[in-house]
Image 1: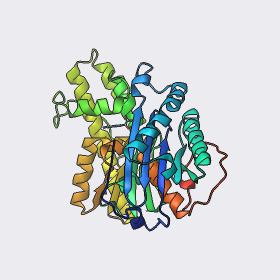
Image 2: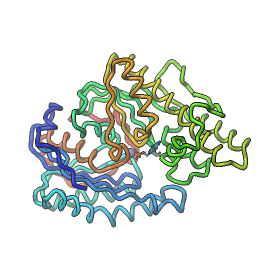
Image 3: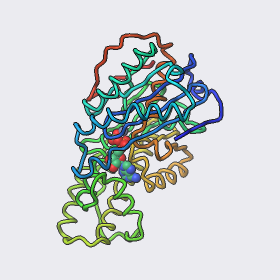
Length: 364
Ligand code: KG4
Ligand code: ZN
């Protein structure tokens, strides 16, 4: 998809950009191949995504080997498409950013090896980006981006974390999930309700539908750790409570599924909202950003909008398509790092980091 912004020195407003760069971003950490071109003067020029959801659906989850093979098939055609849409050619690229981790080892290796081969062939610098740093910075791709410092809620299929963000690479963990991530809880609950894969968006759709008796919950689910006095989360008990509800209401009528979905969404969004507000209070900040797949949840946005408005705080989100995995966030995070580093690379050897703690990152 072609994406043009008004020419403006977007990235300079973050105090980091020293060098003009056109950066190709490659995301391949899981089941989406995302490619994008980010220009440090003009912003995001183009991006494209191929989702493997249909391919994995029949297996009820991501099959790592199939994921890797599909990334191999998609990465270069998508790169050509993005270059064409941005009216650029390979020789215009002067930096390459790729997701180095965390994620599926094989899938990461595909993106990483393509990125490093291209960087070598074009004789340009490259940088391995932390997938979660990509998510964390995605709201900065939007018009009127939030300014540092802010509190970030990173809420995806693999993570539910509250971070204090003082600048790029300056991340302090405030709270984390003790068990399942919120997206994982959405997906597992959806599976219990027979909503297939990927479950999160399907569950949200059912909860928001007319089938659910909204505001008049037939069922009541617990709010684990709502009043724990810290900023941590726990979602596995919620999933177990849903299992009990399901077993007590078999066979499940579609209205019953919708009512359970509604109450589940209420429980998760209430907890996430309360902890975000507590994190802002504890950090003494009035600026919240939300990113990761669950950040696309409409009910979560409604609740966060209302709660932040009440406390005179600001909240920012990436556009819906940049909540879930995408190449734009990797191109952006990579552009910030490459340009600030005055990137002089290069050693084109590579490794991936399937497990990688965000707090290990340094300022560029
Ligand atoms: O950030 P993401 O694309 O991948 C990871 O890095 O994990 O997030 C995917 C997660 C999945 O668990 C998916 O079910 C969830 O985000 N998700 C949603 C919604 N859209 C995606 N969960 C709740 N409501 C949604 N609208
Ligand atoms: Zn992600």
